[in-house]
Image (cartoon, rainbow, N blue to C red):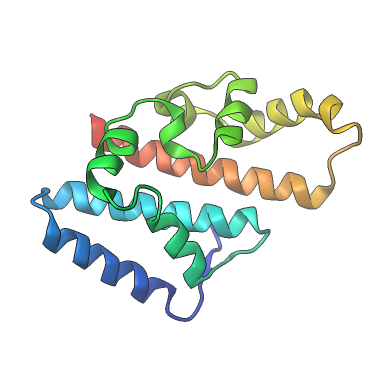
Length: 159
């Protein structure tokens, strides 16, 4: 998707993944899936800033979702959650997907990126009182792709 990692970002992620793995008794596939989801969430934080470079702060933000109980929380709110809320960052993102008629990870994973983006834009243009700028549309499209990637990873894990 064109994302790159800034200095130290990948190393921070790998270190935190190793630390969490050592503290838990979770099976390797669950740790791998969680690690992948956290990396995609870090990319989503970067995309939210309008950047394709994932910085160390994006990785820290992605890892801070459920502190201090990251693994039990991650397991219940993300890994085993069939709802699309597991694949996004914020409640407002869930609302955007609802506007597009998407409620589950399965629906999100199987959806067409452009159709989802267009539905969101068509339902929010009146709220914005102005047409969406091209940069905003591109950021939203990239974020929808990241949400779909997370939904696909989670759907595969949950099957």
